[in-house]
Image 1: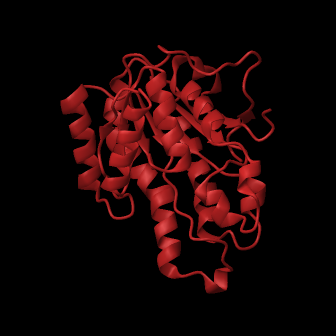
Image 2 (image 1 turned 180 degrees about the vertical axis):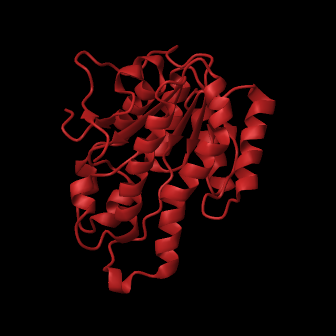
Amino acid sequence: MTLPSMGLPAGWAPAGGDTLAGRVVLVTGAYGGLGGAVARAATRAGATVVVSGKRKRQLEQLYDAMLAEGLAEPVIHPLDMETATPREYAALADGLRHDFGRLDGIAHCAASFAGLTPIGMHKPDDWLRAMHVNLNAPFALTQACLPLLQEAADSAVVFVLDDPARLARAHWGAYGVSKAALERFASILHEETDESPLRVHALLPGPMRTRLRRQAYFGEDTMQHPPPDAAAEALVWLLAAQGAAARGRVLDLRDAA
């Protein structure tokens, strides 16, 4: 990795009820395992949460579930990161400015993974989809939102990575390549924004009970792994002012208890 790594600080605890108070946070891939957990955790921490994803119906189901859990209602903004154009990303940023007048954080939780495949058998469409959703779309969305983020007194963008040693092995294909490139993108963005109000972070979760894990490890009992809630709480810590200590670093949770 090009970014230095760190673990959670001693005495770390999940965010309190006002850690993100007054902040607006955008969560991509919000109806996925990690994305949904981040949307809930950020809401509990006091943020106004904008949930984004490809399927409006699943975003509506997340909305209903969060209300049923007694959480504040999120704001739904459907966006297909596989097909969205620069104009659509700009429209999202303009909408955030119009509706809230600010943006304080982006949690890039969207991911595309079509399964373990040898390069010789990798479908070009699957390759291009993974590269676009996992790398190109985070670039385009972050770039469109940079003016808003840099107008905030303190803001953060968090990119979700995956185990680099594992992804360098056979059959990880476009997913492995795109996650490696995403980490390099985060490193470059950090170098360009290190003296601005915008903090760049990367999160490296340990094994989680998610659909992507089930796809990648067929036959494994995914229930042996924890749900993504702890990783979501750590991501919220990065979004909050307390996360400044991890600026320009990879928060590595693989050895976390």
